[in-house]
Length: 397
Image (cartoon, rainbow, N blue to C red; front, side, top):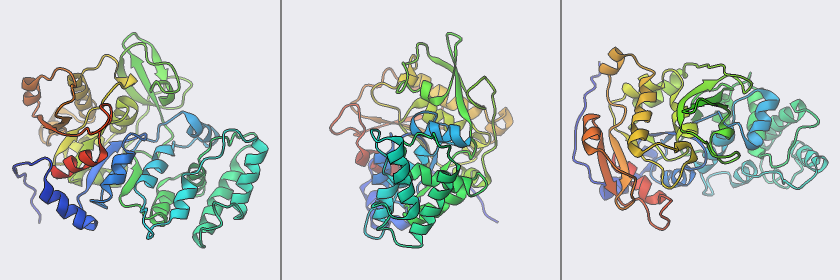
């Protein structure tokens, strides 16, 4: 019979002894879990794999813009772009890895080529005669060809391949070839590229995002929320939910899988990292079971707020972000469950010179949140330095 207890220790941030220990033996590094999406944390993920091979990245599958949108519309599948990019960020980039597979997965078809030319290039990949696939040895090459052949066979003749990620096309083929499941193909390619960490989508479901703004308007689709492909939001976000499709308001939700629950509940550190506040961070916390799993973990939880301007955070102060983050997690729990659990947020990790706005230290203290200020910015005032971020996080484990 095992017993769980909580202990306290004096923190040093950064902690050079702890960091050196992890760098010396990353194979035994801590399980740092990130609720993430987009590309905002990819550079830090690249740095992180030098210190631990056990980080966990739960990414959003709700992207509805760019080339992901075309695949989603074609196959009614989850978005896989964030999944692919994080897998590649964590891939072993030494000679022990698979640099030829890495090059293939990160390649995109040209935006300027005709559809006929791109269709021919896809055929070359399927046949194994394209310059990007020829250097890959069998059986890996044959495996990749099989997944691409599935995608090729199932896309419509008018499917637009311009700008399409080959990695996304490979994962889509694996999804279609495994009874519409992402986990089997992700597991397989994680081993092929020797991913130094674990990457999974928070749900294996083709859901979208919906938000209601404070002015009463409703927006469906991640690509209309971020302010990157469409105009910035005209009013602050009041409410966010998972939606079935993009044609009307149909709220939907689903339980996360048991392995995700276990990952969250047993992580050595849970990090709510920088990135689009609603569509990357809060979206990951919406599925059923996420909040309860966070409450069930006694280990530290830390929030690193964005620098600069995030169009999704219009009208939201840092204190507002903290309260919104906590409220979304608490939606998954009743009062009794929350009362019997641990905290959902312990630390705010901030750069010691950047101005984040007014902090209500008394309110934070009432919420059980401590502020840690340490150098996190080196060159650009609107960008965290990935080395400083990683070392600060590892010091909390």
